[in-house]
Length: 216
Image 1 (cartoon, rainbow, N blue to C red):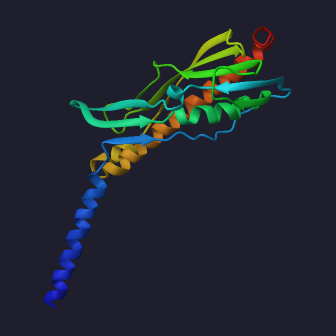
Image 2 (tube, rainbow, N blue to C red):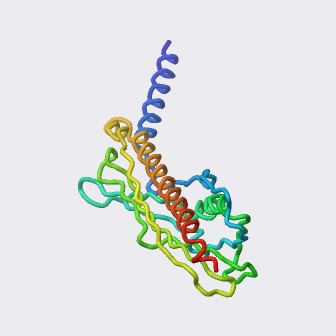
C-alpha cells in the first residue's frame, strides 16, 4: 500500500510539472510559416508571352522580425514570419494564371524577352499588440519590376496590403499561455498569407490592365 501511494504521488507530481511546462513554456523565438501553395484567380485569355520570374537571395530569405511588446514594454520574445520562402512559389502560381508560360530564373540576366523581378520592401512590418488578445496585423509592401531581358526597366510599382486579424482566443492567456500564444501565431500567419495573396492578385490586375504599355 505504501509503495502504491508513493507511485501515485510521483505520477501526480510528474503530471503537475508537465502541465506547468506545457501551459507556461513558450519559445523565445518562433518562426511562423507562410503557405507556399495558394490558389489564384487567373485570366482567360492569357497574355501570350513567356516571362522569367526572379527574386534575389535577400528576398527569397526575407523574414519579418517582430519583438513582442507587453504591458511593461519590450520583452525578450520574437516572432519571425518567413514571407520570403513563400513569395516566388506563390508568384509563380499567380502569374501562371495570366501568362502563357512563367519560368523561374536564378539571374537577372536572361534570354527571356521579359523578366518580372519581385522584392520585399523594408517598409514591410507586423504588429501583435501588447496583449495576446490584441489584433495581429501584417503590412506587406511588394516591389514589382518588369524588365527587358537586356535589363532595361519597363515598369515599376510597389503594391501594399495591410491585413489585421482579431484574436479572441488570446483571452485564455491567464490559464493557458501556450494555447493563447499558438492562437496568436495562427492569426499572424493568416494575416501574412492574405496580405501576400492580395498583393499578388493586385499585381496580376495591374499587369493585365497595362499590358499594352508594359510589354512593348
